Length: 358
Image (cartoon, rainbow, N blue to C red; front, side, top):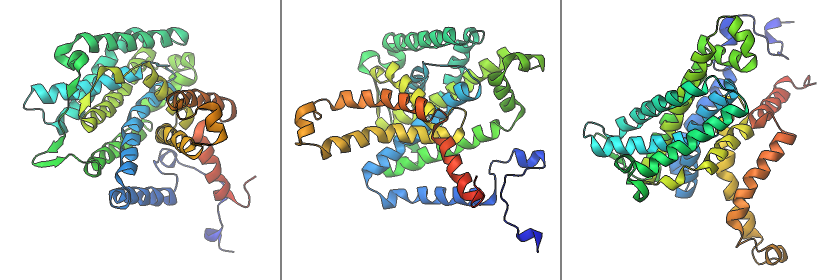
C-alpha cells in the first residue's frame, strides 16, 4: 500500500512553521480564494439591498474584529466600543472637510490612527483594571466620548451632525453602493490579514498569555501593562477604521448613532461569532446585520394573522428587534457559548475526519 495515498484522519503538525500558517491546508486556501472571487462579482449578481447588507456586514466586521482582539484575545472587557467607532467616523469627516491634503482615501486610515491614539489614552488608566472595574471604566469612556461629541461642534458639528464626502480616489468617485462595496471589501481583507498575521507573532501570543493567565505571563517576562494598552490601541484602530467607512458610506454622521446600544451590539457580535476567533468576528457581524432582516420577514409573513392581531407585531417591530438581540445573546451563552466559529469548526472537522469523526 502506498502510504502517500492514505487518507489523513487527524490534524498533525510537526513543525512550528506549520503551526502558525494562516491556512490549515491547501483546501482552506483554495476555498478562501474562491470565496473572495465570488465576493468580487456580487455587485453584478445581486440587487442594491443585498449589497447594502454586505457593506454593513463589512464595516461592522472590521470594528468587531478589533473588539474581539481586545476582549477575546486579551481578556479585557469593553462596553464602550461604539464611542471609538463614532470617533473614527467623525475624525475622517473632520480631516477631509478641513484639510485639503486629506482626501477621503487618506482620511479613512488617518482617522483610524487618530482613534488608536485616543484608545491608548483611555487604555493607560484602564490597563491596571480588570473584571467589573474595567467594564465600568470603559462604560465611562463611552459616556465621556459621547459628551465630547455633543460639545465639540468644531469636530462633530454638534447636534447638527456633519456631512461626509463620497469616497474619491484621484478622479474616480465611488458614490454608489456597488462601487463602494469594493472599498469596504478591500479594507475587510486588509484588516483580517493584519490581525491573522498579528496573532502569529510574539505580540499576538503575548495577548493570549495575558488573557489565559496574567500571573504566569508576568512571570515569563511579559509586560502586562504594555500589552493591555497596546490591545486597547489596536482595538480602537479597527473601530475607527470601521467607523470611517461607515461615515463616508452614509454621507452624514450624527452623534445619536454611537450610543451604548451599539456597544452592546458589538459585544453581541463577538459573543455570537466566538470570543478569540478571527472568523467569528465576521460571522457575528453577519448574524447581527441579518437578524433584523429576519425579524422583518417574520413580521411580514405573519401580517394579518391571528398572532399579528393578538400581539400587534407590526406596531411592536422596533421593540422586537431590540429584544431579539438580548434574547439571542442569552441563548448563545446557554447553548453555544463558544460561538458560531467553534460550531463551524466542529462541522468541518466532522466532514474532514469522516468516517472516523468520532
